[in-house]
Length: 355
Image (cartoon, rainbow, N blue to C red; front, side, top):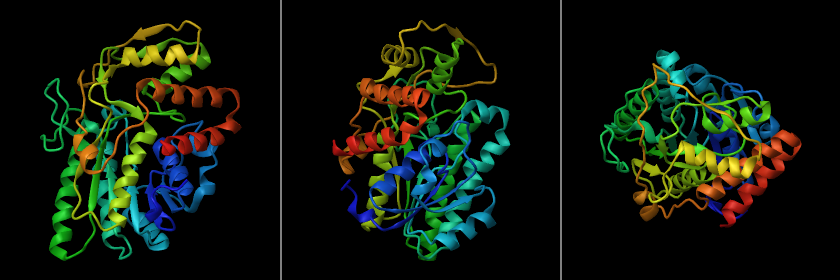
């Protein structure tokens, strides 16, 4: 692979590296020649893509720790001396945020501040890319894509904790400016991720994979909910552009960026399932609808990514059908021969970036 030559040989710390997106990030950064370090809790699921794809072998250092522990985090920064930081670690599940709202805020808001403080105290750190979510916007049910300057909010604890993290980031930028510390903090607000290797609970595609594997009914909360679905590699492409932007000295204080699919291609949960099922299996699947009283999610959510397309020249190369096809291929491979998942992951990365 030849893109992002600026990142070759650079020490990059990835928080949350044992998770679904973090594992893909480790493989991608390793393939472009970066020196990758990781700080994370143990893999959050079993099976886990981190284990199945031997992702630890891509790392210069592998630290198991919690971002809510500032001492452990700062010790990792002192050992690895990263030049760039990709902050992925989070409590990413909406339903889990209702079960543990305090823990969600500790991880997503205070944990982000801990990462930024560790970076501030490490002279080698040139900048940080923080990943939040498309759900940070104050969503009043508007059927329009949100832009980066729209007000932040969040009715559920997950969304609110991520919006609070963004407010903390904005404040931290001002602290850095006042201290004369040149350390831009870029923020990526990504759409709903799909891709092989995700086995988290309460997510539609992992739930579908488990239902197909076990022959049990698939439980769906809202078939009509519209979300900005996109493949994990589309989002990682955006994150790498921001890391490269910092490495080149083209980033100032940092700002927020939406990374979502083309605005003309929104699809619902039901439509996503139809595409997946047509490519995945011919066996009829029973679908059960369930209403969760604690849940408060908006039916319609889209983000406008014109800013990233215009300024960063970013765009997703795999759209709904292709993204779901590649996703289904990974799950089918992991069901039949898990040893092939690493090869398929590397092949998808190579092909995507050839585009």
